[in-house]
Length: 298
Image: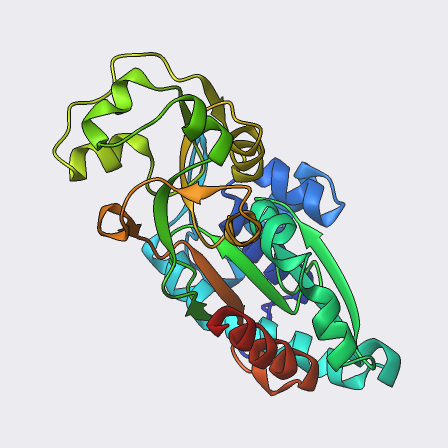
């Protein structure tokens, strides 16, 4: 007997579809959902059969959405988020007052953590949970209210507010500059340079922008975390090209200083406040958005 045409796919199969679309890997998606890869594959096959469309192109490297899959994801993702919002609204008051923030590690450690107590003081009724990783977590599966993400703003179906006026500059400790004076950018090839690998703009791009030859010496260090580069520079090991936003407290305390005039800094839009559409209406999210904008403006 054929199924009625108006029968909806199961929520489980839709969750599996969304997770596989995000990870582009069935095994990883299954692990995130605490099911077996076989069960995840079965759910996908069942969903494709019910829809009568192929949702993924499969290869040895993983899976990629087809055009039909992209359209389907674009349409169902807001519905799944809406279901999550409805569920959140039905929870008790204590849970609704808990703000769950996920953050890029360097921004969380260097900028948000030293200031989050001010938000708690202003809103003692809101319990704050802060987690940090470079993985873009699922708002619905991981129960996240708002994320501070690093990268290019390419996250569809979400509200995105880019943090403005961030710039990348050459930074060093006063002690380093006292021991190794530096007057002109052309002298940089004689200095110890530390490469931060995580920023969107790095030393090679800065040299190219200034129309300077690329350094011929090896990098003194290479770090994949901005906070490690900032600490190494503070300790006087060498020069870094880093975000003044992340280095704000170092600069304010005088532990680091900008080496050149601001005209040699480069603007960057690397950090973004990301949250599902409609979440800004929740008081906990609304208050946090207002507070963080005030802090950034300051």
